[in-house]
Length: 505
Image (cartoon, rainbow, N blue to C red; front, side, top):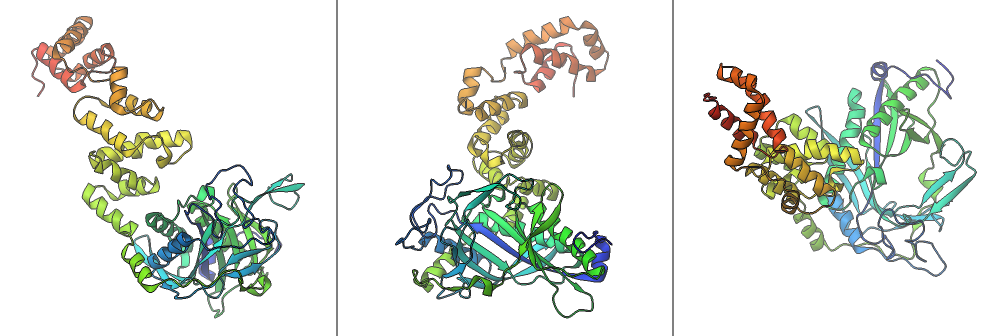
């Protein structure tokens, strides 16, 4: 083994043999409100730096906060969906620390009186249900964004200077904190990923956030510790901060288990600290020593009254909760007749809702899945965007699918129409008309092309007359080329065989 500061990694199976992993997952979700938690500044992502700020979120003297009611509603919806109890009275507190990402030097959060507590979320891992218990879900505000210039790591250490953007400061957050997750054994990394995946799906179905991990709308802090098999007390934990993809959650947990296992086996100790996950290497590196609650000197926020939601309102929100996403997926899979693999691929691509909307607009399920899961999926990858960000609607995809079903388009022409829609050239029907993309269905026009193809390839025609019907493909290709792909290939085949006096059945 090398030094405690730079340990070798322990084989994963050896870690499981000697230690029991204990997880704790803290997920921060930015709420999809139009304005910030305590002021009227907009929350839209991507604005020019420091343009969505005001005296309140910049903490100018005399500015007073006011609670965003919609954010409270969203927090209650999240708590209810996670089977939590909703507090009849909760309170905001000041979490004091000195970092430049909050101009007022404290974060307005909830401490010992959260809005939701004692819940759970059941997740599926390799066909088995794992219950993850929720300790609390509390409201707070997000911090600003720091950009460190110079140095080799992109972090403050070694940087020449830092830039601060306060657009994000004050954006409403709900932090969802699990109780210690034990008994997962070898499946610990997969459980972590499955939990964040299920939570992401649930939040999206509630309509409370866009849960864009790539934009920071959903961030996971992964706490990991190891206990020796004969131990009775929890080990020292590390907290890997702001892991921003589902795959990285699993990788970060696995890496920390192997790193900590090597440290402990070499006689070293695990330092309670925050760590950062390196996407490129799949490793974590040390950040700062982890503060305790005492370090933050929490005290009740004097400028905000307690939040006391009416019990009747809470029950109204409970009654409005949507169908759970995994229940909905099971129902849709049964209705559509998709295989487990087809549905899993669709879920991975975030295409379930798009297919559902396309089917509702008139497309057959298999055709809708084919478009979103294949051709449009390739288009999204090429553009570096999600399926939902493509400039085409489910209704437009359904219309193209209908034109194919009606025989007005073949697959090649349909793709040309979709490409034109993606390029912003208009609606499918208008594109077909302007570009003259409709299938040639006039038998007289097709017959002329068939006769020309037969005359051009007499040897092939003789083979077909002699019984080698499979050779008809060459003549079909000739007709398709002559008609610029606008013929119905099946009809062309029928006409060729009829012209040659061959029974193609």
